[in-house]
Image (cartoon, rainbow, N blue to C red):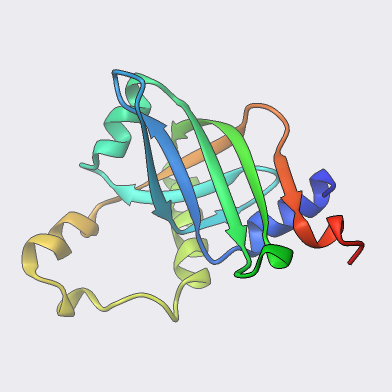
Length: 146
């Protein structure tokens, strides 16, 4: 898979898996919704999330998207990243709007959430994932000449 094909796959993926590191180095992979712009990935997380604390301590991470059920359909992209919290209010609002637009058909109304959960998700922060090396990708269909 070319780098352009890898970025197309990242952009089109329904969700991804962001892995951050605990203080002891153990990885914490969690599913996230994301958008891309100019070879950067943007995710949102509650302002009090442990993910933000892990990123503040060690900004290294990885981002994975994958698809396929049968072996011949499996393909994936893993990207090493540096994570940083966006502090620019306008840029954060733009990214949050893009995420809301991409996932408009998949969200739940805050009124349906228990109040503590709704409060947790009321204050979201945007994290920018900047590539920290080339993507690692595979496409089993390509191995079969498809």
